Length: 220
View (tube, rainbow, N blue to C red):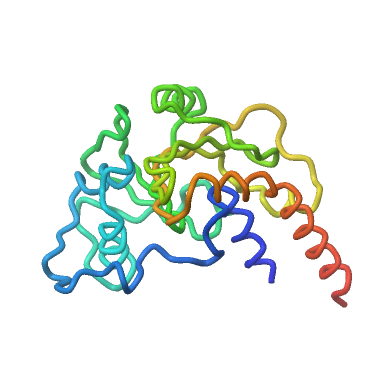
């Protein structure tokens, strides 16, 4: 139960998708899997919302469904975010350029494809990409929809390592976050859906935290 609530809190980064949704969907998969070859350029396009949605499914199959991971891509065992359930991080041997900045590491979280940047660098990208602040108090998040009716969404959000503590009412670290994730979310949802969900995010997280607290108190 705690895991499902944490997944829901992480989805504050994009509240319109159900908790636990994966990045590879059967309807997204190509008819011939052998025809797809993952390249650094594809990852850069995914992170910038320039790739079609089916490419995310193909990438998910290549990286997480038993395929051979390209030699230029290395899984990261410790990315410094143990509290972010579902985050999968990789190092690139050759840097890619994402929103004008060089990146040697890329990560996947549900429908997100992101790079992690220090806070000031992330704010610079937020400004150049004309993102707006989402109406969420629990975490810092920004957005701009490529298509307001169905996405995808260019976005930036603070790490959610302390999600459970915040849901239980414990104070978060004061001040600005050290880093932010910047990239693209491929969830099929409208900008209105996202803003409606974001407006209720704080109360939803509070209710979930109360449920968790009651569950923990009831354990022997």
